[in-house]
Image (spheres, rainbow, N blue to C red):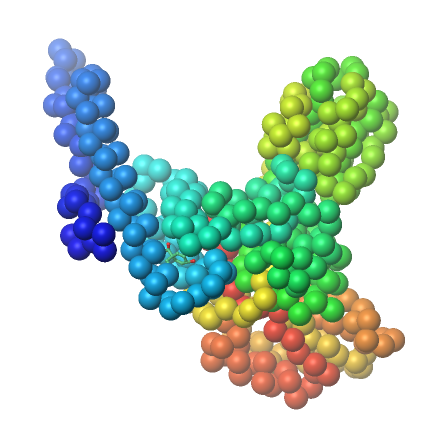
Length: 396
Ligand SMILES: O=C(O)C(=O)C[C@]1(C(=O)O)C=C[C@@H](O)C=C1
């Protein structure tokens, strides 16, 4: 095996599909005639694992050296952001999933490879990513899911501040929630795009599980419950049944709720378990969200449009004047060119009375033939079209 830094050669044999490469002890056949699972020799198995760990470590080191070489091949770049290629990362991760034959599930493998890439990139310099803080929010979890733990998270006070810090170049990227499967769109995030020049560089889908947590861990102590308004709404049924009399106090984030609950015996927070760990709370109940498939979609904000990765989505803002058939005219070019529409939402455009902005997500990259053709046709009718971003579709 060739190595940029002269690494030792390591075995990279792939076992036959569905079988393990490890030597399996022969199965003994008991009197019943059925083969019994023979007990493997613990020392032998551990020796085998030690050998595999050495190989994995060598391969990770070798990969890191090659990633460094890629960095050099990109020329004299200045900052981490110049090395970061989200479309390439999406391709790498998609291949990992395509190759996966188990026994580890897709989510686990994705997490492992994401962390390896995150560490490889951070060799140059860690990416700085702004998120809705404080520590322990679901936004921080989404950040780790998308950028891995080697990125440097910058906790910020509001969604506006995340936009501002990326615009000012203090953060390389930002991560903001945009919709929840049960509660719908977070309008304040969409409205930021009316004035912000930022581009969408990715999306993250995060399963959101809510927990009731407090300092004492005693249900009978609770007189008030802090949480983000969306989380209070997500746990409405549970709260009605279990804490009908407690005061519900909306705050700027779930982690802020946990921070407040830390300071009083009669208070609890509804938040992710992460926030509970950060602020030292005990879990009383959970998951308590009304819908078990509760998922929040986040957008990754950057300053540049990305090239295609092959499995992309494009987000657009289309400005139209109020007139008969406006919605039909916006929709029909996409239908004519066979472009699937994942989402459409209309908002007052803030550019004049009765002018509207349609926020639209379509399948494909803005540079792909059918999307480009639909956009050209739409351009003949719309007052303005802005491409907010074309980015890899979330993997899991
Ligand atoms: O392929 C590249 O362009 C690399 O820089 C390597 C690599 C990787 O580790 O695979 C690292 C960072 C980029 O964001 C994408 C991929």
